[in-house]
Amino acid sequence: MEYFAELFLGGLTRGSIYALIAIGYTMVYGIIELINFAHGEIYMIGAFTALIAASVFNFLGFGQITVFLLATAVAIIYSAAYGFTIEKIAYKPLRNAHRLSPLISAIGMSIFLQNYVMLAQTSNFVRFPKLIPDFEFIEPVAHIIGSSEIVIFVVAAIVMLALTFLIKFTKTGKAMRATAQDKTMAMLIGINVDFIISITFIIGSAIAAIGGVLIAAHIGQINFYIGFVAGIKAFTAAVLGGIGSIYGAALGAFVLGWTESFATGYVSSDYEDLFAFSLLVIILIFKPEGLVGKSTAPKV
Image 1 (spheres, rainbow, N blue to C red):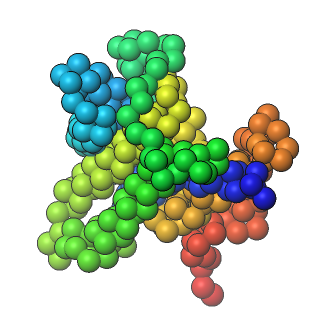
Image 2 (cartoon, one colour):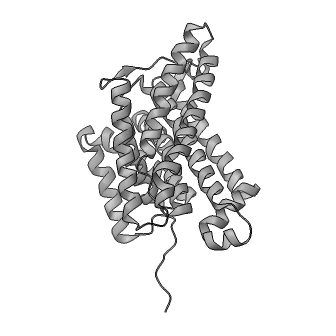
């Protein structure tokens, strides 16, 4: 039972990270029906930015928690700026082009950012400082769950609740929903669609940066390639839950996290990806709209 609990909590941690990235995928797709394949690299850039910022703040003598908060804030701002810039450079000029064009541009931007960070930093794994302190209250169960895992789950829950509030109860959120439903009609009623699209990229990038900082602090090392792997898994989670649905992205992320965790624990870590992508294939065959997606079959 204890081993089951350990695997369950491990899957919850994975799922929380996947959810933070998958939400960005599904938000962008919901607004402009574009898969932003560079989104995983924003997650990676957030982690590297936090590493650099944490090194500076540690040198200045700040406390551990303060360094964690400040480094995360810097990563959020920097990654949000990247998301905004990428949308303006790589996607906006192709908004009315053939659907294949922005897809190729997104893949190209992903490869560009990978190589840019590799050349600017290093191709090797880099040690990430311990930013999350150990909590005394978890000592009795420290062999099952660590302080970083608790922080990951709590932060992910807060972010998802805050995003839900934004989407449902704020003017910007209503404008985002209107844009997602019908961009032309949204423009006719006075919504600045370009601004809403930029805001969507900014919010998605900021959330991905939070995920990058959390996983780097949890694992203790990063490299330029972590964004590609995490991005593919998060995209899988978004499709699994129902691309375009924020709730679906979160659900798909947790289902994927638990699938990987239990497959690793009870079968073998060698088959982790096999189980994850096999689950995706099964869902696409029997429920192609995803776990909570709505069927788009035409009515006759």
